[in-house]
Structure formats: C-alpha cells, structure tokens
Image (cartoon, rainbow, N blue to C red; front, side):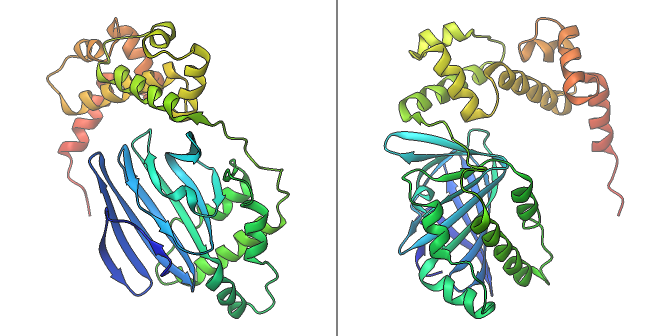
Length: 324
C-alpha cells in the first residue's frame, strides 16, 4: 500500500510476496508488525509490542479507513486536542487513520492486536473485481463511522470476537483467501450494525491527568514494600481522589489496589522461580506483605498453588528436559 509511511523508527526485517515484517524500536522496548497484503489497497497487520511507549511517524496519505482490534493488553493514544483514551482487550476502533500516529503508550507494557487498513481510492475497485455484486461500499462505511472527531469504539461483543478470533492464527496455505473472506464478513457486519447498539462511550482524560497517573504508577511499582493511600497520592500529585481512581482504572484496566496486588504477586512469582535461596518470608516482605501467612493466602488465591508448591513446580520444569 504505497500511501502509508511507517516512520523512521520502523525497520524492515523480512519481506516476501504478500508478507512484510517490520520492527519498531524505542528506548522502552520494541514491537513487531507483520503486514499482509490482502487486496489492492487492503492490508492486515499483526501488532505485537513489548514496550512502555513509542513515537510513531505513521502517515496515511489519501483517503483511509482504519480498523484496530485489541486482543491483549492496552494501547493509549491521543484522540482529540489534549485528550487521551485507551483501547482495551476485546475492543474495536474505527477511524480514518489519524489516531495511528503520535505518541502511543502501553500501560501494561504489552499490546497485541490487529490493524486492517483500506485505501479507499484503490480498495473498492479491488473488492468489486473480487465479488462483482458485493453491495457494501467502503465510502458508506467511512461516512457511517468516521464523521466525528473522536474514533468510533465498539466494546466486546460476540460478533466481533468471532470475526477477529479467526484472524490471529491462519495456516499460511489458505491465509490470503481466508483473510479476504473474513474482511468481507467484517464489512457486512459493520454495514448492517445499528450504529448505537455497541458503541462505547470511552472516557477521555486530559494529558496532564494521564501523565500524573503514569507517575503515580511508577512511584508505587518502584518500591513494592511501600503502600500509599488514595489521599496521600491525591495530595502528592495534586489530583482529586475521584479523578485519580477513575483515570487509573481506565488507563491500567483495574482499580489501583487490585493493580498493585497483582504487581506484588507477579513479582513474588518471579522471585520464587528465579531466586531459590530466598525464603518465602523474605519474598513476602520484599513485595510488601506484613506476614508470610497473608502472602501465602493471597498467592494461592491468585495462582491456585502455595508459594512452595509453585517453586517446586518451577524447579521441576527447569530440570526436566523437553521430550520431542
């Protein structure tokens, strides 16, 4: 698709026939984008990012329709002047491509999803030549979903989940034809969808608020032995308690205390697996638990096993060779 420029921080890794693999890098990590040409003017791109943030120079020159689906993680982008919004797991965003550039953040340090992009000037003739009596017009889809300044977001729903679940793992022998069928299915669904049925009214937050929330998260996760109250954080970062809680949940996908509990237990699991000389009581203290008993109960509730059983299982897997 000649009308797309991916930017200076994107390098080609591999290219063959209809497949192109690119790597995006930033000081916080890297992401891999695997692009498939489906029709003239139509691409499907798998996006797999393991980073905190990146600056994208992505530019779509011409008339474009972009559909983004989030399967795992979260992506935070600017949606209008000085405002930020997150696309969450299971959600679908439709716009004209203007929200695919600028600074993107990945609050969970991971994002896996799909982008389907249509060059409206060349894609429609390609679709018409594939199925001569296909009634859906890309211009109508664009007019239906892309007239607002804000992107149109559809929350998790069975139809979307069904269509996209089958796009993530497709055998290479049938990939191109299968992608074509699924794109036609998606367009038929979007054409028939009652526009207000699944639309999600996403909360938008000022960039200044979001920056404070990221700073709060960095503070809390930098020392898991410390605990902070909402009131302490509110005063320290000059943000109202209600706004703090609402914005944090929207950005990170869970309430602040739930997020921190998961961070502590995930760190404990890492230590149990990789620091065999550390006692369970020491690990409990290192992640902010007052007693080994409370830690063990919380760990078992989350993982289904005690800390000692988890460690034994991890050590067994390390020493047992894989059988071919």
